[in-house]
Image 1: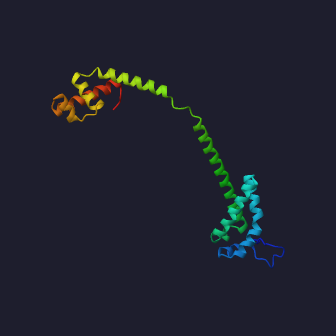
Image 2: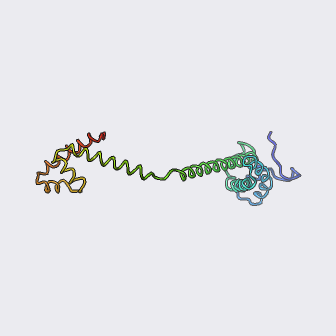
Image 3: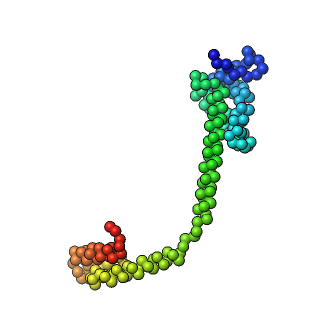
Length: 194
């Protein structure tokens, strides 16, 4: 037979915690006041044991008691005593607070590391771009005159295939073929994989 946790000095005249939580589930504010008085200290103790910080423990205690008020209809006496249910809520809430604080610290640490990353290396970027341009020029020299002219007009001057054909006075199909062949040779020369 389970023993009920009684509040007050005279257990025969005071309702037990389980009964009080049942009344809280129905919206009884007076019963909630009695539950609050009975469990605030134990909840604070659980929170303090996990958090080791008085201010945070007090915040968690308040959050847990608000949660008791809101979720009292979910309490199931067949799963344990009301005190155990409330203290479980307190422990979970305190652990969540610790996890949140650890995650926030990890985010702050990561952000601090990102703040200390070296600045964009402009000189290296310029050297790489220059080397790439020189390689493209070298590869352009391997093309036939017609391929080089077509590629230059289409990709450096931004002309359409039709405009390139008009500028070189060639049929559109010939220009497309020369551009395709020229781009394949450029790709091979530059070592670009398809």
